Length: 188
Image: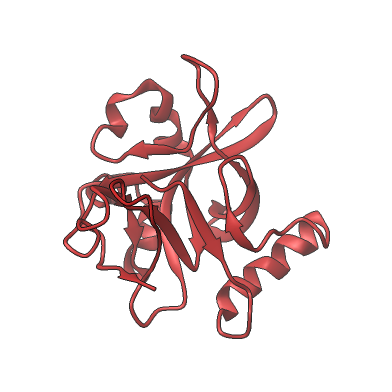
């Protein structure tokens, strides 16, 4: 499960800085939040618009139709079986750019920050949809790999630079990505 992620925009994170600047041009100076991103916060997503990857602002979490609250994650393994996410998979695949994500050790309740080794950016698979005229997204999770398993049994489905375009543009390739083991992460 991914319950929070982080966005840094300093000189060490030039790609995130570029995304923040593009969001601010579209939505205004105060539109882009950096630091810790929580459910229901607006955040940058990357999506396909006329065969170009563009950043947009979207709110994190789908309304939960069964009860109060929101759905912030969707399981990659069962995604295509759930009506809530089928439309998003076909028409709303997107990417959440960030610099890391947080996970809590269930036993100690300690919070850990994870990132990719030797990479300033991390790209999480996500789906977007519109609810009440507002665009929202959920982050896809999968079974934890060996680097994550000591802390938690789930983790975000992370894209590599090689498969980002496949996720956005090719439904068939995206189905394979749902089954991939994410790259190893490191605890900062």
